[in-house]
Image (tube, rainbow, N blue to C red; front, side, top):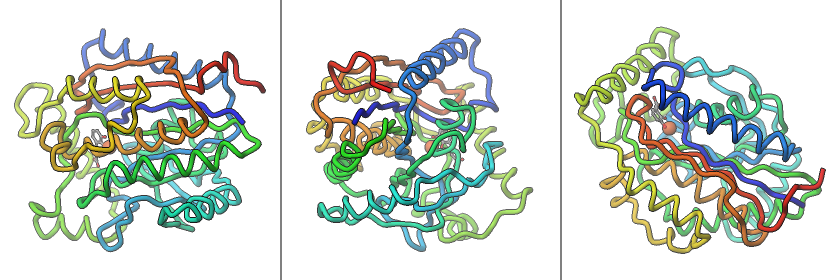
Length: 319
Ligand SMILES: O=C(O)/C=C/c1cccc(O)c1O
Ligand SMILES: [Fe+2]
């Protein structure tokens, strides 16, 4: 059955920062086009590959990827606080299928998701409970990282499962591209930050706001050229999107985690979600990219990209 894809950067700063009007208009246009693509396709099921930023997954137990059988959002950065409409039966079968194909997928019967998973659902559907969803966490912030090849294999196994479903499936990849927001790193974290990275201690509203304000302030400094975080890397981003568009996904297998961080920032690992999503689509056959948008947007601390794609030759997906 049909499969279509949306990959998009997320940034919690979308609602807290103001890039130049022309840039904001270009992002709004891209969002308009992607919404149209999704509305035309009218998916019955969303498989969402998304990272987490130490709101749901912690160093206490950090899997490289994990399927949620149930999920609730944490409401960070003003995103919607709700229980997702997880297709639990499909999630269970997906996990069993993928594990039957030698991918050691973790599962969660109580997954917490943050802006990384929530923002695309808000942008595409206006809310996070509008569609049945299978959330798949992909670690994009916490070292060590599994190989890109493994991420591709995981995505392909998920794609092998979804192509057998009697559903119109939309796969989403959320995150990236080059960016280095001030998410603490274990190696350089102070004791209080290590506590935050280690395990869930439900933050007070005040603590959550302080954490968010730190990122909002960093974005302002970054846009003014004053922040101590890595520059965006548009040529890295464009080269990555070129590979996705060309269908040569195997060329991404060789990306090395340390090089990715050095060239494109610590959070560039969020592109793992895109790699999983494209491999999931590719499991249904050769694909064509329908739309592609990219801008480096320091106000959002993000190389900001959007791609839509579908299986080649499928002009309009049957409803
Ligand atoms: O505060 C966080 O945990 C992350 C913020 C952020 C900022 C910019 C781009 C992203 O992908 C982010 O997750
Ligand atoms: Fe992120």
